Length: 175
Image (cartoon, helix red, strand yellow):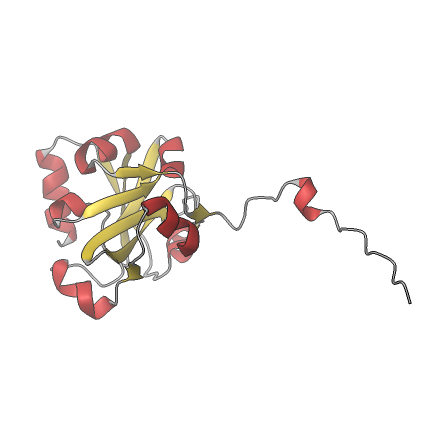
């Protein structure tokens, strides 16, 4: 779905959005920096296969998937990161790695880390490595109807609680 098709869909749904052009960037953190958006507001889209079905995982650019926890929260044994060759044809007109998080338009379930819901707005790649779209999160949620998840993710920038940072005393050796 090229950028113009996504914009047409949003226009048809009467969604107010802002398109932001930026110099080409290929990682979510790089996009956030170039588009002057906080990493917790920019959504990145990860394509996976869950029990043989392709799906999207959408999470803040500043976060990572903890696969062990994610698999447990999904109550399944088999989740695999999809290879680009497997999914590039599912997103006609989109640059690989810049898929917008609209699984409903691509016949895919969308699993969304609920941390994104804490933001009034969401920003995401619009099908290219040089443009993002910003819109109200509640409108995005109403259009996409993602399955909200609170487990299976980690933000490496979140400070650890004090009790995790304290060093444990080393027991004296009894030689």
